[in-house]
Image 1 (cartoon, rainbow, N blue to C red):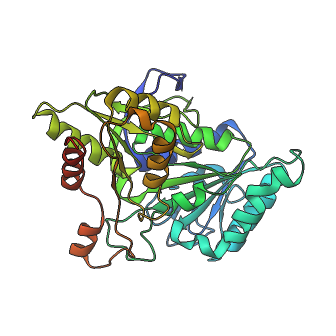
Image 2 (image 1 turned 30 degrees about the vertical axis):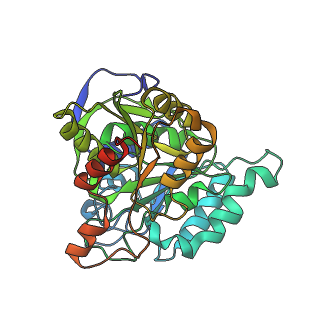
Length: 348
């Protein structure tokens, strides 16, 4: 992991990504009384919003237990209206609170796009730098669980293109905790994208507080033959492909940007300078994807390093299929990443 992470405790626990996020929310709420959580079903439970003892903590249980500890004035169940959730969070951030708003699926962002794109992202600019908007929007991204085309998209490239927003994409529980703590403490709006297929992944996570600065990529595997830049869930698949290729003597360097805005291109340039080859792996659709942006930046700024053409691995330019076998074909796989790396290693 990045040596820039600030660790305050050596004790650790094996946590799922879900539990790492839950632990971070609780720690930040204990540390700072201005931190609040709001969203649809963030309390939840059979007993309704008044029965915190039966609180389920949302569809995936990420916020379970928070209402019981912090009460219903700081953990707020909202109506099913994304524009109201994000609008209320924006106002709360401007008036001194640090809200963490849950937008249950990133696919619903169209309902509250004006609040995010034309208001939240532009407050600091429009008020001459005098306004702070310490707002974190947690949202779920990605396919693989059969949730269908309206609940499975990876829209983070679109959000990364909006000036004024920061976008984080953790690929593991350790990064999830450090990045979320950084997001909550940040004075600018952050879109925090949690891949729903990663919630049960486990890793050792320090028990104490630590921060992972935005704009600092992690080199998850060092190598000398080829650079692979992957995002979110694709990082794990890229590492699996690298393990397979290592058996054939291929040395793959895997980079996880961790944030797409800001985007750490310097680490990528340095890696491509060493390996001379690049594969970009992104679950989003190919047009205007992060895979395209990273490939474009390397082609424009580090073309002299390249020994072979850049290879992109993305989902196809179609909606996410609901049918399980089609969805499996839609999402980039370890096998497809491995084939793409082998293709990029060919001499042209």
